[in-house]
Length: 165
Image 1 (cartoon, rainbow, N blue to C red):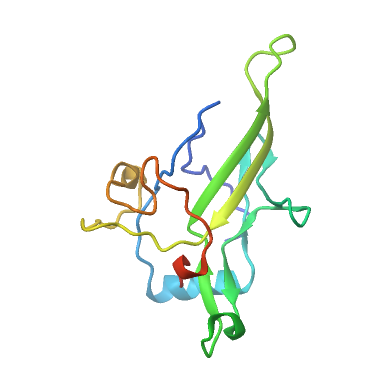
Image 2: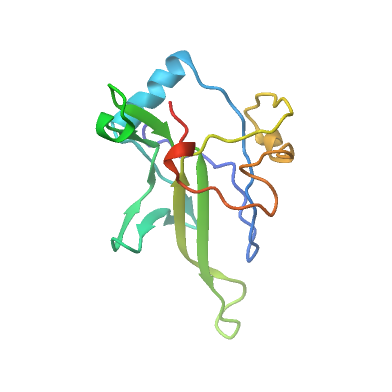
């Protein structure tokens, strides 16, 4: 927590569309689960940068952009039908990086925007048992993931698939 800068485990090759890439598979319980709920309840945000540009969460329909993205969100009982608030985690991120090329003015590309669309999704891992990992090795083990399969549809925010905390 706080303002500690760290390198993110994401790789963004230039001018290449990248499919869904899992970074890790973890199970959260006990103290860490309570801690995540507290972060969501207190509306903590994650801030990322690329080439010193902050990540923005945008809405074209509502015409706004805000820095960072929330850790998750809290749904009231009127939405969930439960007796208490339900907490959900944003565990899937869709990044869009905009850039411009002007070969007559400069070499390479200049990044002009860095946007994120956070998604809460309960991933479907198929029949194969997934070993819990907290490193980038999970990216090589996504065969059978119906929610993150190569060439498959990109996950979207749907209440039926939210990942509850």
